[in-house]
Image (tube, rainbow, N blue to C red; front, side, top):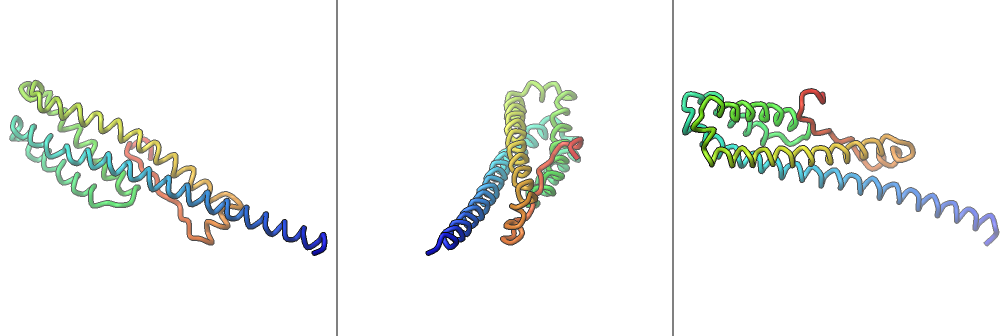
Length: 177
């Protein structure tokens, strides 16, 4: 083989290696986004599992707040039915606001505010909210990195060729819109 043939073989091999490296990096980022979304779903499930317990604790003391309690249950069910991160974020924002209203009811009911079960649930929800915030930040960072990579040249060429699509951010707070 001539020197030109070796040079051509080296260039083709280098290009192929480079393309495989880009593809593998895109796949790894996509899996990071999926794993991060799974973490968010775990936290949302924890939150959703606590809601019936919280509703029952409040219902015992605040029977005439039935409309508020039903709204929380309906928002919980609506959120669970959503699968896309953007849609789920909107539903979770509404649910979070309704949960804050339920917890604020304790101010109007001193015996509820002193109830150990309610206080424990309130603490658990607070912990879940913090864990959810951390998971959301990690997920959104992974999505940002992934979306940036599939939009940058030359990665975008392989991303388009192999069907890599942008992911939605998971936003809860109103001021992040």
